[in-house]
Each structure stands twice: as structure tokens, then as C-alpha cells.
Image (cartoon, rainbow, N blue to C red):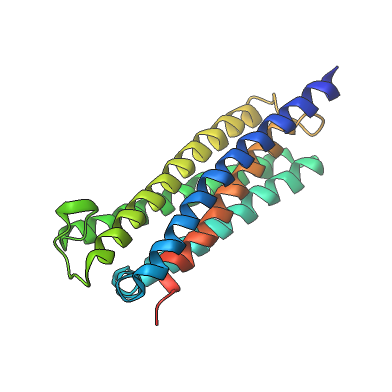
Length: 199
């Protein structure tokens, strides 16, 4: 009975991830089409983004993926004390990612780089507004997924502390880790699109 429920939970999480992957794939395709139409504006937009924040946030999320994978390794080995610290590290890194993203957005907004018709930064034609509308939309959607992931990590961390997640019963932790890895993988695609791909 328990194995049957675990199988259903795994299928449900994979369905969620597949639907989210389709959503982001559509946005990636939209970005690709507009980039082909406005290459100069998109190149200028990428250069206007703050590369060191994009790189630092990439390092932060990759480190957080390692931390949650390490937590799973520890729980499989019965080292419960380390599991909690691994999840605390994931929470701290995820929060740091959001803080740096807010800092970047704040700098852009101060410079008039905002989405839509309110854009007041340097312009390289209509593609400039499109680039930053996609930038805010896609990185904002990703940030919402990070927030959802943090809520899930906090939930499993609480269950680890309460000992309702144990060495013999940790499927919830594995499924939350799977979702967290997906969120990190999405950022690995967003990073070059908005920070690296310029002439």
C-alpha cells in the first residue's frame, strides 16, 4: 500500500514538472523568436544586465542543488543530524538568490529599466522593451518557483526535525529535491539568455 502511494506521488510530481517544463519551453521559444527579429536590441539588453549578479546567483543555485542532494545522501546513510543542516543551507542559499535578484531589479528600476511602455532606459529600438519585458516576466516567474521551492524545503525540514521523515521514510524529501533541481535547471537556461548571449 505504501509503495503504491509513493509511486502515485512520484508520478504526480513528474506531471507537475513536465507541465512547468512545457510552460518555460514556450517562453524560451518566444525569446528565441524575438531575439532573431531584434538581435541588436537583445545584445544590448544582455549587456545592460548585471553579469556578476547573474553569475553569483548561478553559483548559489548550483550550490543549493548540491546541498539538497547531500541531504538525501545523508538520510540514506542514517545521519539525520546532517540532513537538517543541509536543508537549512538550501533555505539560506535560496533566500540569498532572491535577495540578489531583488537588488538587481532595484538597480534596473532606479535606472528606468522596467517592463512595458514605462521603459525609460537606453533604447535600441522596439526590441529593447521586448527584451526587458521578457527579462522581468521570465526571471519573475522563476523567482516565484524558487519561493514555492523554499516553502517545500521548509516543510520537509520541519518534518525532518519532527522525525516524520526518517531513513526509512524519506520519499517526500526526494520529491522536493527533484522539484528543486528542476527550478535550478531552469535558471541554467535563463542565465545565458539574459546575461551571457551578447556579441
